[in-house]
Image (cartoon, rainbow, N blue to C red; front, side, top):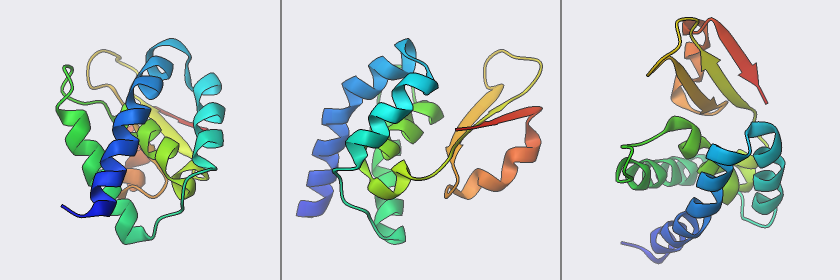
Length: 124
């Protein structure tokens, strides 16, 4: 484990309660500006550093009681990386609703090209 990895882990763990509160209580219109403002004080990572950060966030997220949430992962990345904070957040929804009927992602995520799999895509 490198010092950079440990620093990123600390940033993610510190941001997690704030992000989780916003995710379940505030909605995207209210939490996104706050997270983007917070990220303005963070450094901008290279694409490879962003990939490492994304993997770290996914590892932490998978260990939470609900087993992981794509919206929370996107919000965490926005909160701790200045580059992610400048990206659009997408939320794709399928008309039938229910579990696994939606997905959230950032423009730079590999699955960004799958927007056509949803009946509606919101861009924020």
